[in-house]
Image 1 (cartoon, helix red, strand yellow):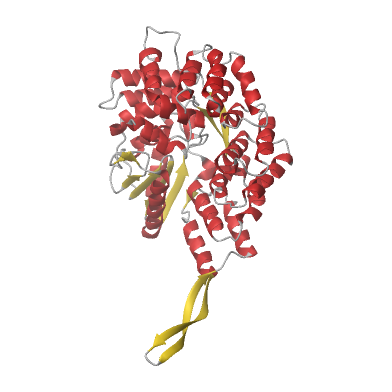
Image 2: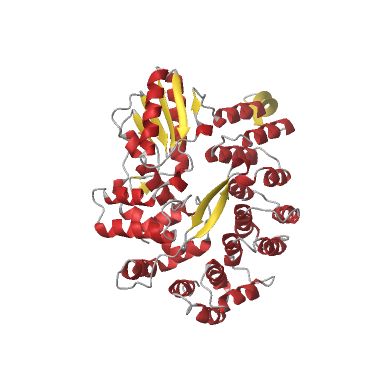
Length: 495
């Protein structure tokens, strides 16, 4: 296994739209994908081979807001992981103990997990809040969507150790995946893109004239600390001017002065303590004169009360809630509940922005048939769902519910609801279930000669068929494009 493949695999579950189509091809067919990229797409002698324009998708955020990004196809996604992995040395540690930045780089041969970096970042914020009188907390408005592709390409080209071949390749990649548009090109939610975004802003950390005693940054979330408010304001103005050189702006709605750093972990600890109860138990203890009964104080942990569940749900509604804190709350709810199934309908309806985290919670549900019924009831309530919701409900079915309860009806309802959502529908088509008419549905996409997510995912969905039947279906699909051929050959390696 190559290091690029390992990097891809390790990050896969944490991405916004983790399609198994990409994972399977990277695992089974990475050498051929790499050859196609570096021998054809990046070769001037093959003008017909290029990075394809990517499919636009929207992930959910709190308060009904959407995060606009793209879902990279297998070739484009592999390229970005490979290029960043090979050039991982340019992504440096923090500047100093006074100019701190967290995460999104490699350490001891492995990329730093986001949740670990974020936890360290939160600890640093808490410590600085107790050591300094004043702070300013702010972030860059729509950072990834506002980056200018020539700025990023020139930044990458300027780095020591980056070859001209790689710098030219990255510029071509940015240009072609976005059909030539110079902004709104950077993919969200995948680690190599986050590494680029984080390192690009290091010019703030390196700017000598800043006078704040402590600068703490996690990607584009920046907090300045000092005992003199005037120093903070002066630096705040300087940083805005620095950002302005790259047409980046601070988000006014998220700027906070002397904002106390709340800690969800502390709140959960308080609730956990309230669940503990000391009870008296009796134990027979053998002695020299016979058996005596001794009293023992035993600490037990009760399950959550209705009021405590409501308190947790209230925490989840916070506008400023970070993803790692949402994970922590849902994990706590999972651990301290008699049955998660009673809370899942509430979670689905009230927190569409947390659907990815709810996916993880569903892995602990033992009443799988009942969970499939909960999903079916939820999907039948309306025709108005976001693509991100439907994608992750599809992932819940694939990862936890195949063969249980109403899972087939859930898949058919998802297919019906995703008529205008290519990536969510691709999620359903790539699940290798051949019942409920899905074999025939995929067959139609494979026979039309189209080359897009619907045909690619349909090809992946044939992997559980007998080889002869599968290869027959893939024969004409493979002739439609170079991408179709690569996918076809990759699927044939599945046994």
